[in-house]
Length: 103
Image 1 (tube, rainbow, N blue to C red):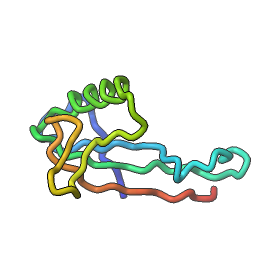
Image 2: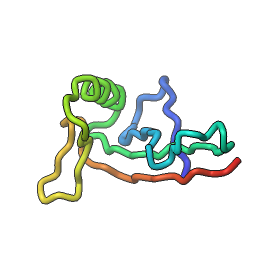
Image 3: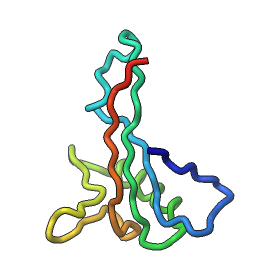
Image 4: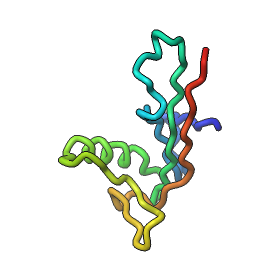
């Protein structure tokens, strides 16, 4: 899967935001010793309104910074009542969990 790069100069028609995350599932803590390459997981968030990706990033930073709990819900599309950390998000798209790849 390829993740589209965001060009800061392009602000027309951006309706999704992709985030790369380092997962504890893919980081065994000794990648330097084992020569493993850690590949990031990725999450696609659907924006409520086009071109609000920068606002979503700012809201995520604030959300993470003010968190007082161990588990944070960014988006939940599976429960009977959907839940998102911000009204700027209208859905959770593709979630890709990558594997550790030997180099």
